Amino acid sequence: MMTASLLVLASCVQQSGVIKVDVPERPAGQESALGMTADPIEVVRVGFVGLGMRGYSAVDRFVHVPDSKIAALCDVEADRVARSVAVLERNGLEPALTFSGSEDAWKGLCESPEVDLVYICTDWKSHVPIALYAMECGKHVAIEVPAATTLEDIWALIDMSEKTRRHCMMLENCVYDFFEMSTLAMAQAGLFGEVIHVEGSYHHCLDPFWGEYWNNWRLEYNKEHRGDVYPTHGIGPVCQVLGIHRGDRMKTLVSMDTKAINGPKVYELKTGTPCPEFKNADQTNTLIRTENGKTMLIQHDVMTPRPYDRMYQVVGTDGYAGKYPVSLYCLRENTSLEDGYDALGTEKIYSGEALKSLQEGYPNALLNPEFVELAKSVGGHGGMDFIMDYRLIYCLHNGLPLDMDVYDMAEWCCISDLSRISLENGSMPVEVPDFTRGDWNKVDGYSYAFVK
Image 1 (cartoon, one colour):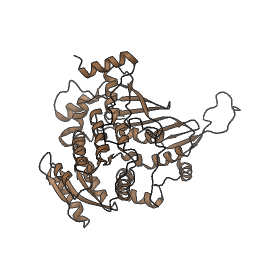
Image 2: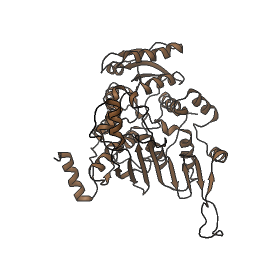
Image 3: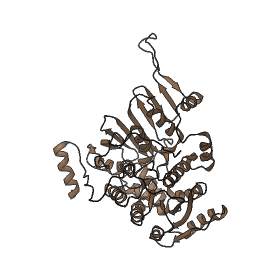
Image 4: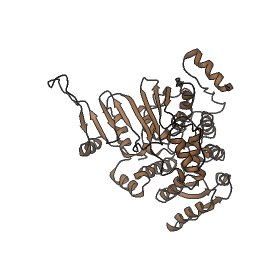
């Protein structure tokens, strides 16, 4: 039986050949959050909600983040709070407020006047309620990936951020990986000519990790949801290269997926329960076209033994960058056809030391050697997690716009719901909403700003 929402979608398809989704009008009294700033905070007091794998490691990193204070700790399970309290004790830091023992213990943290920023590392389903309540309480929020998984929740976060003038940032660490930051600087300098195509993915066999998630929530989520449920690591860095909502925007997408083969097997193995229906495919592919005629390919695969790979490929009219399986740059060479029609490989390839030398000619503000050494020593996926945390606090401390705003969150997360809609309608094209509500070409470029 077709639901009312699908009937609306079907009628849109018949009219235009593209499935359209609603873009609600901005409520009266709200303003765009593009370039939004807030008053500088001398010491950013951080409250952490969810102290499992990601939350605990974040607390451990924040010991080293200047101009911040670990002010509050919250988890349903008291032993996880105690483990994070021990981090503060080992480092001689002031005690933090603690909250635990109930499913809504986080409300007390959000209400506390001792917290400026709520750092959310819970399961995906609880991200949005916590973030909305925190902003209502006057707090800035930083949310683990994916921040939201439905269009309804995405719009709720946008409206609350615009209404309260509180920052809502998604903790997408992969934009701070060293190769991605260098390549962004090169693309902005025009080294690759005009970038016309990009690729990103999340290929990560999770077989060793499924049992580590609290209450088995991640495997359950994949069982119940079809589409690219984890797009942000792949799409975030390439959206920055294309300047999405900074001169371009994603316009339409089409998704295709394989059947689910490994998913049901893994579910039965981990839970002991037969699984006749597992919605998430072993491989999901999404192709996106932008307003300016560029294309993006995004893939998701956590079920096969394919090697870890975020793809990260940038194709320009005069050059190419690729991170996996081997990092390299290719630039156009001035060659002739003296070797005949069959001559291949006329581009010049930079890898190894030649790659490092090329990168040095296009410096990124975050890649000075001292800061890179600090980031690697603190760690977090090789240092990119620390850079993400450092930049978040730096911008709040100095009253700057954040590197990733609420519209980045929306655009990178919406692939989950839009890919589902495309797949459930025979891989029909789906229109990507303009989450900026018409402001996508009013801000130029992307940069890491520093106070001199």
